[in-house]
Length: 69
Image (tube, rainbow, N blue to C red; front, side):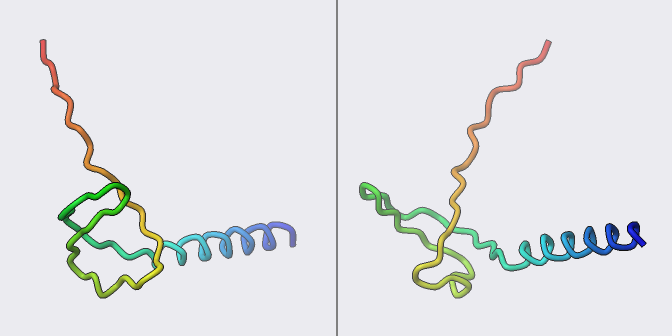
């Protein structure tokens, strides 16, 4: 009986965590201008966003030189 409860609890946790990933929208943007703390961007599929949405912006990674022997 305890194994069934543990398996059911793990299944519920997995289902809820994967459902949260479905709400995130991926939008590709290009920065047009930066003025202090204000950034203006042009985005594809911007209709997925609305005023007041919190977005996470990841700056491009700097590519380091790969040195060989």
